[in-house]
Structure formats: C-alpha cells, structure tokens
Length: 556
Figure 1 (cartoon, rainbow, N blue to C red):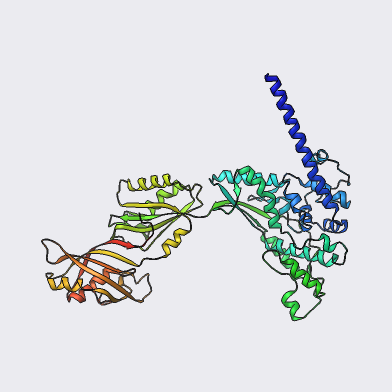
Figure 2 (cartoon, rainbow, N blue to C red):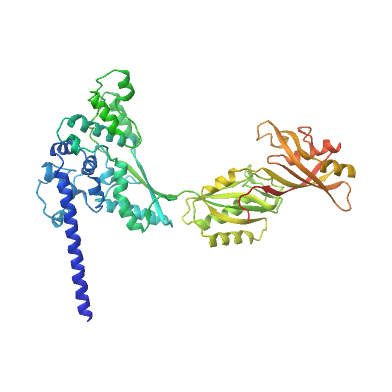
C-alpha cells in the first residue's frame, strides 16, 4: 500500500509539473506574441542605443506580462526580443533563434552575458548594482532580487503583519526616462502604428521595479504589501564622480537639448519637465503639436557604472504613552550633564525610556513630556503625560507586554518614579499631546517672616483669575529669551500647618507656563503681583509639588 501511495504521489507531482510547464509555456507564448505586435524598428533602435530589455518592455506597456512572471531571467527576455528584432539584447552575442517552449528558454539560465549597463535605468531594472562594500552584484531575475531583500529583512528581525515598499531613484534616471520617451514620440509620431501601439503614458522605472518584486517578496516574507508602519526601502544613488562627469559634459556642450524655438512659451514649457508622476505624455504631445521637435538628448551617453543600492528596512516610530509620577527631589526629567558632571541621581527619561526600549527592540528612543518640572519639584497627583518614541522598533509590544513594562518600572528598587496608564499609540499620540496644558495645580511650602493671620488667608482665597506679569526669571536668563509674559492665577487657598504660624501650604491653580517659585518670592520685582507683594512681606518658597496637570490624555 505504501509503495502504491508513493507511486501515486510521484504521478501527481509529475502531473503538477507538466501542468505548470504548460501554463508557463502559454505565458511565454503570450509574451512572445505581444512583442511581435510591436514594430521591430523601434525595438532595434532602442536596443542598439543601450536600452535594456525590461526598459523596452515597460516603454511599450508590456510590463504586466513581465512582472507577472518574476522568475523570468534576463537571457530569456533577451532571446524573445532577438527573435523579433534579429539583433543583440542586453549584451548577449548569440545569433537569433526561435525558441519553441520553456525547456529551450530555461537552458538560457546558465548563459553568461557581458554586462552592459542600461543607458536609461542605469542597471536598476537589470537588477545590477553596487552593494555597500562597492562590490558589483547582478541578480538574474526579480525573484532573485526579492530573495536578497528578504535576507536583509530577516537579518533585522522585524515582526510585522504587513510591509510598505519604498523606492528612491537618482534624478538622472527620471531625466533619462523623459529623454527616451520624447525621442520615441519625436521620431515615430508619423508612423502608422504610433497611436495604436505606443501607450498614452510612460510606465516609470520605479513603478516597474515595485511591480516586479512585490509579489515574490510577499511570498518570501509571508506578509502582504500594504500601507504599513514597517517599511522596506531601496535607495539607489550615483557616485559623485558619475554625476559630476555628466554635468561637465553637459556644460561643455555634450548632450545638450537642441532648441528650435526661442519664444517665451518655449522657455516656459519646452525642454525637460521635472515632474512627479507620469504626465510626460501630455507635455511631450504638446511639444509635438506645436512643432517643437528635437528636444530630446537621446541617444544617451554610454554608461559604464551602475547605481549603488542601499537596502534598508525600518519601522516608523512607535509611541508608548502614559503618565509619570516623580517622588524624588533629586531626579531630573531628562538626562542633565554640566561640565561632564551628572546633576541629580537619575532622570525620568532614562528610567522610563531605558526600560521601554529593550522591550520594543528598537534602535534608540526619545522622551517627550507635556511640560516639565524642576529637578527639586515632585510630580504627584494624576501624573504628567508623556510619550516615549521608539525608533525602528523590531517588535510592537502587546497590551500584555506593556503591562509588564509598567509593572517592571513601578517595581524598581529606587522608587524614584512610577508610571500609569501605559499604552501603545500611533501618531495620534502627538495629537493628544498637542492639546497642551490648560491648567496646572501646585502645593507650595511657604515661609513668611511674621505670623500668618486670618486676613491673609481670606485675601488669598478671594483671588479669582488674577492676571500677573512675569519677566523671564533671573535663574533661567542664561538659557531663555528676556521676555515679559502675562499669566493667570485661577485660584488659591491656604492650608495652615499645626504648630507653626509662619509656615503654610499654598495650594493654587494657574495657567500652564507660570513660574511658581517667582510668583511666591517676586524675583526682585520681576513678577508682579506676587505672594510677597499681596501679603506685604517677604515670602520664600521652600518646597514645591505639582499636584495635577489638566489634560485629557492618558487618563485611566
């Protein structure tokens, strides 16, 4: 029975292979027929001027036939073109011959071609590039190129259920596309096949590359290409020397556009059009209708060097938001170093961000908070809203992991800081933070040189929305602009301290941005009115706590 089952499996596998080959042969037949439908002369023209086969296919809107079969290698495509044109393609020197089926074509995979860099795409659609070490790399097909991309993604260790593909090309490629597109329209616009065979728009190199590699990359990664925070980016660049040589040649008169019309309209609309997208057709057609021919710099100069390619995969910033409470009067909000000496025992930034970063497996982090308190001021009550921005996170933490992070921070032996209501956010975290601090509440321990009386208590309690003027405090003049600010004191109340007539707790609610210390002692008259001026005596602030930050974000 086992032998019979194995034999059956072998027969089924053979049947599947035969079916696959038959389907592939049908695809190639359709591709061959599509190429034959294009007049041979422009194909020969482009091939003889150093344009690669994939560029030729996309110029004549055959990109779907190519991109739907990412495993097609360059020798196969070249052979199909040679069958139609009878001339060499992409550097091969074999004589043209008719290929009957896929088995004939697959034998061409081992053909070693002389490398000739495409004069239009500069090797991009030939999957030819210099890597980060300057080594020349050539992949035979879109599938092979996608495999190289997959390797980079897996090395980075990102976890994601989708990806977004980004491609950046040198401006030279865009200009080359425009030049060859104008050339075809100028040279062949009078041909009978022109309107029927030439597409209305030029399919761009960038779009062709994306279409070629997306499907095989989806298969290899096991996730879909979509709008995603996880980005796979291909950045192509030309060496400074290559770009400089091209500009020198143009400056010396090589590859210049031939101008046949000196009118203002020509100066405004003619020549190259550095445009985003593909409205080349409209501008080219207008030029042809107006008789402005000879604008193209095609044939392009011979290219000896391909682009350098940098593979990069990264995730857009992940934000973990919440509220922090600070119980120490010797912990700064952010890392504070003066003359290579640390100020304070620690910082909230390091305690909170330093624990969140490894959980997300990111590169670095940035700490953002809704305002800040001085190092000697505690943050109590409901806490202060904050965001930790994790850059290039390999893992987006789950709700359970976020809760673990919260518990870990709150269990630290130092007990300097606690966090609450942690959650993972997208860019909406910034929207919540941008609402700003409308009001803040404080509790200040104040000393005055005389006993506090009932009139003092009543005077301060009667304050409602009092306007004060504050010049930039003396203590921060070295780092802040010397301005005068108008702020509002919404209300105040005094809490007496048992056994002391000169010390009291001042509870107050103020507009965000009010300098509380200066409001108490007056800052040598730079803040007016102040507690000292209202009570008509000296007033000193000994301790200060923030007890509430009035913002809606990150509430329980």
